Length: 112
Image 1 (cartoon, helix red, strand yellow):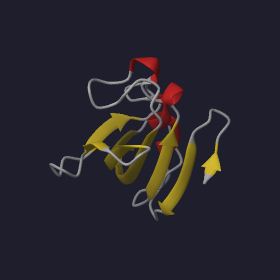
Image 2 (cartoon, rainbow, N blue to C red):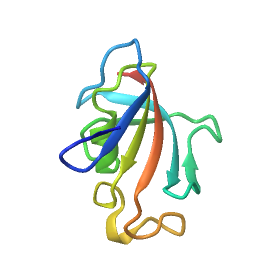
Image 3 (cartoon, helix red, strand yellow):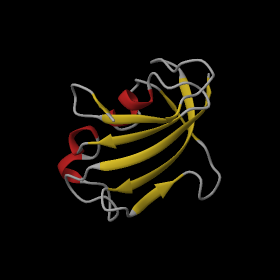
Image 4 (cartoon, rainbow, N blue to C red):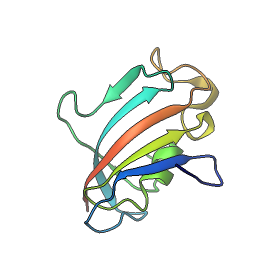
């Protein structure tokens, strides 16, 4: 597992063979998010609804913007996101407690 200067940790579980994701592009992903102890709080795979967002535009948590950049289409990456790159002291609803470290498995499906 690699660790960035921000504290984000990541590991490529599958290295994609497509082109690399860069800020400004729209990434389409499948993802599953869990808390450290394993409780799943969200997954695009549950409804088979891929999620798209503009990379680096601040439309998602900071850990996603940083962690998806550099992935290649077809790749799968594990992200371990510290709370300050996630939902911080506020948490998110009833499913993500304050100051939670988040784990995401992200599969990059497409770039536009």
